[in-house]
Every structure is written in structure tokens, then in C-alpha cells.
Length: 294
Image 1: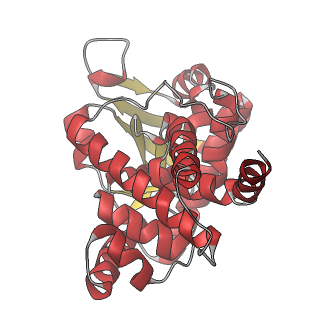
Image 2: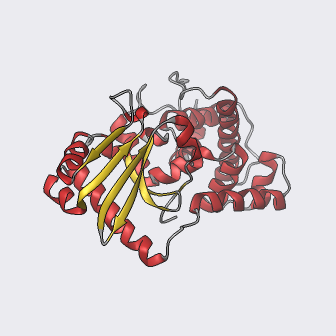
Image 3: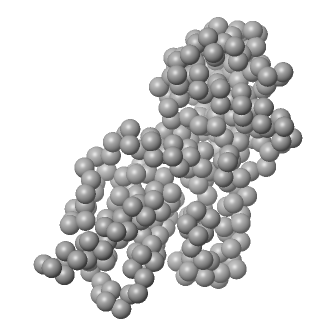
């Protein structure tokens, strides 16, 4: 009993780190908690008396668990699991609080989660462990059965995807970011007047038919009309964040880190003249998303 209690206590010292790694690997708080629980179960079944660095051992274990889950997701493309294993290390409710998950996604960066979700499992593991948690490549390589050099290449390729390639000068990118940030803040805050001031009087909004509720693409003109529509999407704006969309600053709506739609902006003289909303899966899959401020 005392031995098990001591092992549980040692595990709890590393829980927050393991959860942070798992969440960035999986993009789902429920799946991250499943991975952490699996790490506990494997620890409970193992003899770690000779392990000098338990944190490193657990990080390796939870990373392998996450890699298997990502590969399984790639083959099945199913939704996150809803059944959770039980055990002495479980310390959460049976369901994940959506508010908690939204706050966590916002702290990590919705755009980053979206890009990570588009990476191959081995690329995601190499990037997350090395770039976000400073794990050396020679420790990551055995997890994906690659050489350290090949693992470095995977992380480099993932890094290029995450950071993207802006298609406009830095000064224009800064202006775009300022306007888009203000648009998102006004939408989230329900500030109709502030939103109208960001829009050109003749602004045009185009949305493909997947945005709904109409079965045909949507075309809206005029600052007041567009702002009114944005106010109706105020709750959705909570799951929306700035991102590099096809090389320019736009918005990515990604509930729980899974891309749902993107908004592209045309900005002239500091005003938004056009908004393009893409949600159709085929079109969405062709959009290049990158994270800002990574």
C-alpha cells in the first residue's frame, strides 16, 4: 500500500507536464487525459527502481502512447474517445468542461493546434517534443524509429508548416494583424459600433454553402449588414483565433482545435473591404494555415 501510494505521489509530480505534452500532441483534453492515465497504468505495471529520471521515462511513455493514438486516428479519423479508464491516478471528472478546454486551447494557441492537427504523427511528435519541450533529437528518434538526423528533418519540416510563409511585407502583415485582432475583439465583445468602424461602407462578404444555413453560397454587402451577421456569430468567435491564412492574416475557427472554417480578409487603407469564409471540406483542405507568434 505504502509503495503504491509513493508511486502515485511521484507520478502526480509529473502529471501537469505529461498533460501539457499530451494535449499538444493530441489537441484534445479528453484524449490527453486518456494518454496520461495510460502512462500511469504502464508505470504501475513496471519496475522503475533503476530509473534515475522518472520524468524523462514518463515523457517517453506518454509520447509513445500519443503517437499510437495519432496513428490510430489517421487510420480511422474518428472523434476523440469518450470512455476513460479508471485507476488511482485519475483526478478528473468523467467529462471535460468545455470552458476549461476552450481556455486551454486559447492558452496554447488555436492556430497552432490547427496546424499541428495537419501534421503527420511523426512530424507532430518531433516538433512538439523538441521545439515546445526541448527534448533532444537523440531521445526522440527511438520513439519514431528514425535516426536523430531524420528526426531533425521531420521537426524542421513541421516547423516550416507551423510558421508558414507570409506573402506580404512585414509592415503590411502588422497592419493586417492589428485590423484582424480588432475585428475579432469587437465580435467577441459584441461591440457593434467598433465593428462597423473597421469595415468599408461597401464591404463584401462571401461565404461558401457549407457555412449555412442557406444551401447556396452567401453574398452580403454593406458594413451594417456584415456587422450584424458577425454579431450573430459572437459565441462562435470564442473558438476563433488569428492565423496566417494563405500567407495573409486571417481567422481560423477551430472548436477544440479542429478546423471548422477560415475567414480571409482584404484590407485597404486600414479598412476591411472583403471577407471570404471557407468551410467546404475540399476547399478548406486546400487552404494553407500557419500559426502566428510561434
